[in-house]
Length: 194
Image 1 (cartoon, helix red, strand yellow):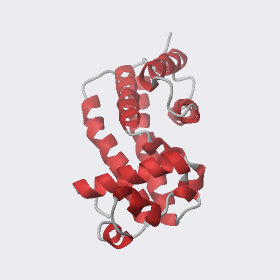
Image 2 (image 1 turned 60 degrees about the vertical axis):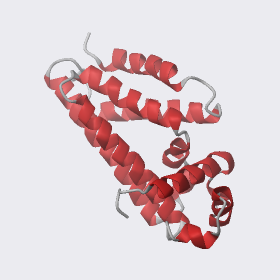
Image 3 (image 1 turned 30 degrees about the vertical axis):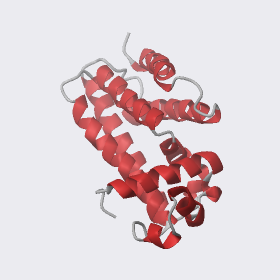
Image 4 (image 1 turned 180 degrees about the vertical axis):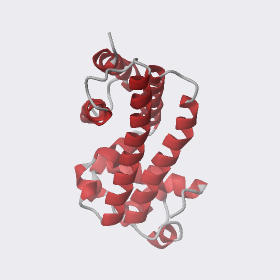
């Protein structure tokens, strides 16, 4: 599916996200989604051919959002780029927490090959951008060269994944932006040169 999402499709994605957040992947059915949208299942199929297409579109929409924010990182030093990269994501997730469910749900990985591909593509895109930032930081002597950039990516991504899991398990109760800033400060202390 194209990354062009109509207003109605976005409304459907948001409703699907609400159900995902409240009931998990098994609770997301086209019947429940149609009820949430206050129209028939057949009307739902005019916008998406399946539940799978809705989830893939959700993941593609997130990837598009990340691409749009990536351009804002230019002309900043690598530590500012890392901070801004994650702060943009925290703001996005705060306003639309169901994306956390979509990205970090183990159950989605078993749903379909298309969903697996969309998750993998999203993850690879994030890792590629982070690798570029980290490598520039290493070249400039701002980020440690004691570890390879791939190892640093695993440390950073693992920390962020744990943080997002904690936020999800708290039912999105704590302030993701202020707590996220604290986590980012800790990560930067670990990976920056002294």
